[in-house]
Length: 129
Image (cartoon, rainbow, N blue to C red; front, top):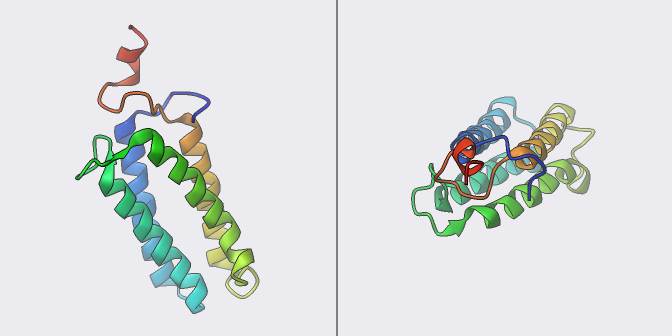
């Protein structure tokens, strides 16, 4: 589900865990309405949890195939982008809303350049097959 296979699975994993932590920490540090803070904490927690279960280099339990994880990335990105508007905090918590939209767009960008084909081999070696 990517356009360019530039980003190895390990780097994608680092981005997953870093993004999940950033969503949680920024929401708690910045504060705001319960809906705004809850969005970051819940979506960040889900991202970390799913990443722990993904079959890629940084996954711990490895029960979710990496290609299935990619579909979750797009779903999570859509949730991040839509949440401020659907949950009604785009105006009252503009800073968090902008952060969530930016994180959603970034998640789409990372997903579009990730190599989901074989998470255990670097992309350079797969091209040699």
